[in-house]
Image (tube, rainbow, N blue to C red; front, side, top):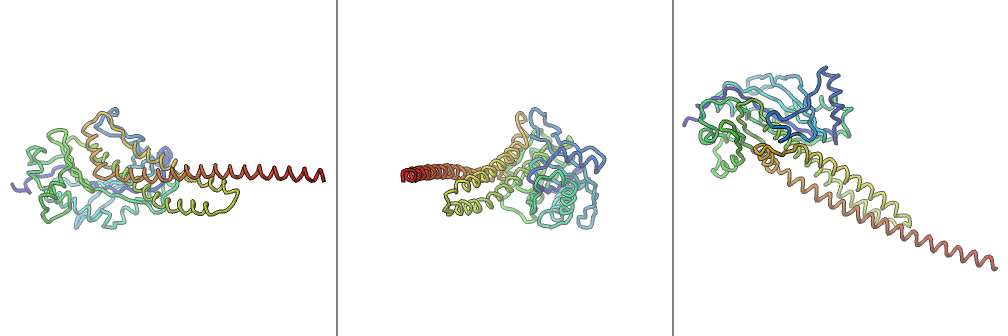
Length: 374
């Protein structure tokens, strides 16, 4: 079959850039700041097709519609829609929506790859940097402990609403070559690589489809906006935030070992306070990280929508979010154990201090008795 025959009538290419801009974000403050800046109310995001009882945001992020901007892809300039979503746990999810209407399938794939070349992390496009700077400057009062060197994730989606020339989405992978779009590769892939690339496929109706990979997705949704796009954004936000805390704990553990060693080396009868102070610092770190990671884990709550739940779970697994989350849990367990050991050490030191005080009192009593009878 001629791979160029299918025709895309209504579609868009969505480039996402997720940035950890702060430890947490005061969302009501964001809404207030945006109302004063844009003179319009900010919206709280919600899933469009899923019932609130079936799947909902834990704490709905604030959605901001930013000014459209021109984006150059090759010799063409497109007026792109720009949006930002701010999540309570400190992530700003920016997205640029490029129109991709009335194209052959190969031209649509080419547009997706062109968007990646211009807006992907490897491209170093200053558009994202400027957007992040603008958001941070505007929302500064709402940011709790802004990030000095923010981590980033990106994701690219090809979203099609009308595709002509395909009998059904069940046979789409046989009738269309999705590999150039999903892998960004022009050279033929091995059969094993192709099967692995197309492994994460999901469909609810006979005319919709979602194919997920590590850094790209292809979605057909003839009924308008797709909740799958929002789900992929949340999964990427969770990955980003877990990466942040994994790296934070990587930095904290050596410092913790150094502090514990320094405290042990202090030959001081009043070292109990040092142990107690260090234990409190570790307890505070564990409490803060645990609180935020619980918010990240509960960013999206799934109950009844089996289809979206499968997509969401597969996205989390594909992005290795559970793996990074387990690494965070292991490091937190090490710090908890250190806290418990330090607490016991502090109690032991306090006991030694009490014994020393008792001995001193006994000696004082003996000296006073001797003086009285002298």
